[in-house]
Image 1 (tube, rainbow, N blue to C red):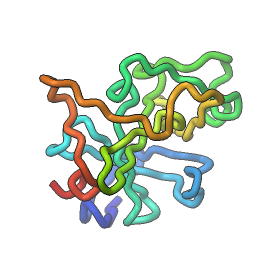
Image 2: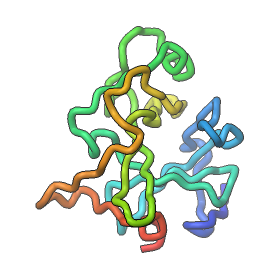
Image 3: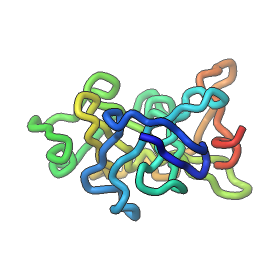
Image 4: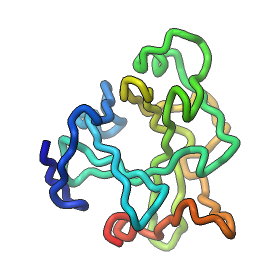
Amino acid sequence: MILNTTHFGELVIDESSAVEFPQGLPGFEDCRRFAALEHPAHEGLIFLQSMERPDLCFPALPVKAVRHDYTLSMTPEDREVLGWKEDRPPCIGVEVAALAILSFEPDRPPTANLLAPLVMDIATRRSVQAIRPDAIYSCQEPLVLRQGRTECVVPETPAEAICS
């Protein structure tokens, strides 16, 4: 499939690799399929490009890159969307991928939404934005870069994230 995007130009996407959000995302319920993209200039960042809207792209990081001690908590409804029958959180990195959407505001450092991570079943690629039933984490979790680590360079603005 050829996907024309605002930020990445024309891309060739394998439709079987699409990340599916059966319920869409809050505020973007009409967008249900995304391509997970990486950019060589920003190793570690993942860009979720809408396959329905060329202008919609969310920069994200794995939750464990933001907080290495992050624990996943999901409602029964979210587990049902993913097809999980068990009453336990799935294992991040083994059963599911969990991403925090990044937020950029002028004159402020970027933050990550750990209150409502994007959780994708690795086997089926079905996904949900899992709004935590508790308030352990924030939707504006500060990003702290550790000295001497080169896993991820967090850009200051969305334009730098996509264009550099």
